[in-house]
Length: 453
Image (cartoon, rainbow, N blue to C red; front, side, top):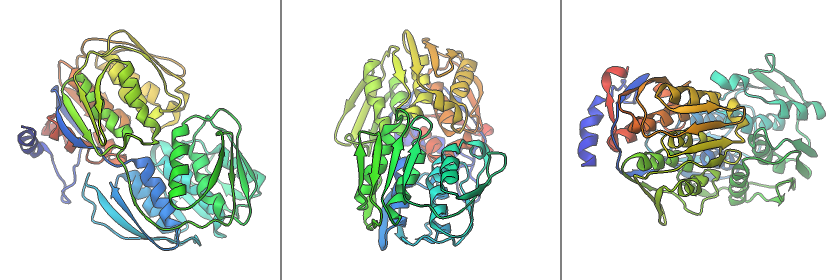
């Protein structure tokens, strides 16, 4: 049945000359989703594996990659720094392996690095400018241009590294060699600064320490970094997430690495199954260190029907109830959990979500504004959301705010609408999940082609 729906529905997609999905807006007719889906690889782990392999002297193969816009930005960034990464024919939404010939002696083959709209690419790669004598300029677009980088600016000031920007916005040019020492980093702004330093400090000629000056949020992302580094033979001592001790003169070792499925992407299909249908999510590591695995505990707390297996998570339509969700360790889950809360019994409150205001969009304002257009009852708080659940939503026209997670969350919300949902800016999904709309149709989603151009 699923195959028949996919065969029929996929004809609705307008494709450009390369055969890629080209979507500016979609009109979704409310329908329950069901079936089995292979969850795309973790974007967080893909970034980290590509960077670690790039710093290894030797050849590595990274398997199970999807070339989303963010991942392509990191690959191109490492190429600019002298790493050889094979060109692979990139079909939308399909997974591929890539072969990398690493280079521990980073060099500026290209003095400009285009981070596109990828915060991970920007914050992970800025410290690499401290490994080369040439000036490196980082550019970007969209909200990335104004994402805060004050943590790095303070470090540059302390180390007398020259930098200039456009009134605290990109482009950012950096010139000067990074020296080993003590690096003080806030834990409540972004773990990406910590990860960026962890990639580079082991290569310096001397030992270093990262001191976390506030409570560390998103510990799961730091765990992913430490685990990936260890797989490439880099050792970092973790002192209860307060201090990280890093010996210098370490060497990355090449290896073959397979990227596991992404729990932040699985959360969309898990919620879709809870709202109406039976959905089986494959290619997930139930023992994963991903912080977004918290979706499983949250769904269980909301009385969702969920079963886990070795590499399978199965969900069924459920009458869920509201709960309190702490967003500090899993901010990427907030848009889709807001959808779930909006159609759950009782009240759902999302707290500790201040950082969501400086993501690809102000996600607190974006998701509350757009779901309220669909008939939800959501009040925006300074650091979160207060959601009064309803039995159903009504439908209407909403916007993605050029944010992939907002677009995907609104698509899932259509399941509980009584009227069609039109999402403008729906091609934002290419940032992390270029095959999302194809998978949505595969599971039974009904999309009208006249709203796709």
